[in-house]
Amino acid sequence: MDQDQLLDLIKKKDSRSFDYLYDMYSQSLYGVIHNIISNREEAEDILQEVMIKIWDNMDSYDESKGRFYTWIINIARNSAIDKYRSKNYKNFKKNLSTENFVSVIKDSYNLSNITDAIGIGSFIKKLKPKCIKIIDLLFYKGFTHKEAAEELDIPMGTLKTRNRACINELRTILEVR
Figure: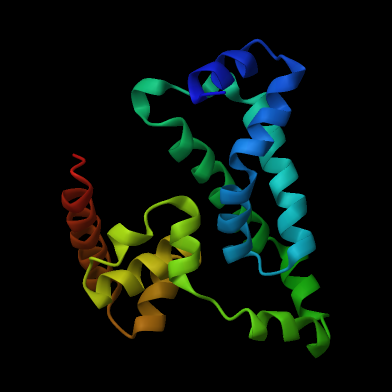
């Protein structure tokens, strides 16, 4: 099934479309979510919520504003960031024992694996190292501008300027304007 057929089925609320949607996109969406929420169970729960959001909000998708894949990746990313910043999740993280972090250390974060999961890894690798770090912090780890500026030990205005330049460079590489 191709994407256009899937979109038509979802808009018609055909029950088969949910299974197709999950089969086609769950792995990529899970990769984005798990990058932000390191806990496997929480990431799986968020993935289920994201799938339902996509299904329920299909009417708000506008093809003229962007690709379907970009739309659902943003839903996944924003949902994961919302969860990460929530008070309940912060309290949950405070109460974890060190045993829960063994898998995090073993599976140490690797930007190339995550970007490959959403299909832009080879393009990001073409950017300057400082751009890779900024994109990593802002888009994959969900840092705010303030948090990223503190992490990189640069003024927030400098970070924003560099981010804008990096995104423009990525657009040039992708030939998107």
